[in-house]
Length: 262
Ligand SMILES: [Fe+2]
Image 1 (tube, rainbow, N blue to C red):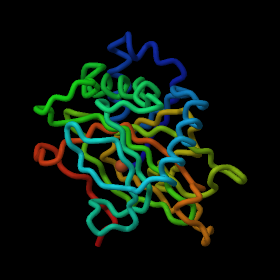
Image 2: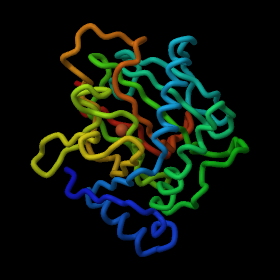
Image 3: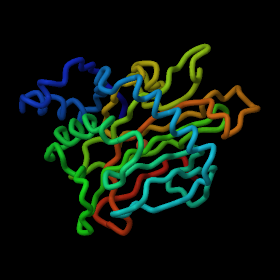
Image 4: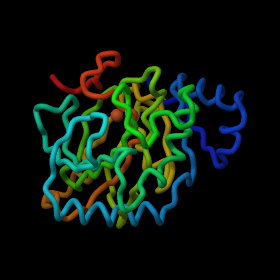
C-alpha cells in the first residue's frame, strides 16, 4: 500500500476537543493517509537538543540497553549489526520518562505523545507517568536518531501497530536541500505513483509526521554521494521517533519486519 493523501494540520486544538475530528484523522491514517502537524515543536529547542546530543555522542562511549522498565537513558551506535531486527546504520539516543535529564526532553516532545495517544484511543497521558510500574507491558521512549552523511540508512520495514499505538510518529529535525543539513535520502514512504515520498520534502523542522507504521517505509542512505564522512563529525540527518515500545519479553505484539533482508 502507498500514501494516498497528505493532510496538514496547523491548529491542534480541535484534536483535543472534538471526537469527530479524532475519528476523521484515525480513518485517514488507516486508509494510508499521512498527517503532518505543522510547527508542533520549537525549532530553537530542537537545535539546542542536537548540540547537546552531539557533545554526548562525541564524548561518551555508546552502550546497549534493552527496552525495560527503569532502563537508563543512553546512546548506542548501530553499524550494520547482524543482531538488528531491521538492518541499519545510525546513532541512536534513547530517553525514558522516569529519568531526569538536562534538556527535560519529555517536555519538548510530550505534545506529540498526547496526540499520538488520542489518535490511538488511549488516554492522553498513557505510558508517560514518571513513576515506574514494573507491571507495564509498554513504555514511551523518545528515540532520537542520527544518520551520518554517506553512512546512515535503515532498511525498508513494517512496524507493529496495535492497541498501544496507531503510529510511531516522526519529528522532523533536519533541513534537506543544497547547502542544508543533508541533500539526498532520508525517511521515505511510497506515494501514489509508487515512487519514494521523502518526509523532509513535505515537512519541516518542528513538524510531526503521523502515518500507519505498518506500511512499508525506511531511510534511504543519507547523502549517498558523500564518501569520506565519518560518525564523529555529526554531519547528516537527525530525526526523532515518539515510540511506544513493548518491553523486552512481551510476546503480545510482533517485532518490526525487515522487508529487504534476504
Ligand atoms: Fe519504522
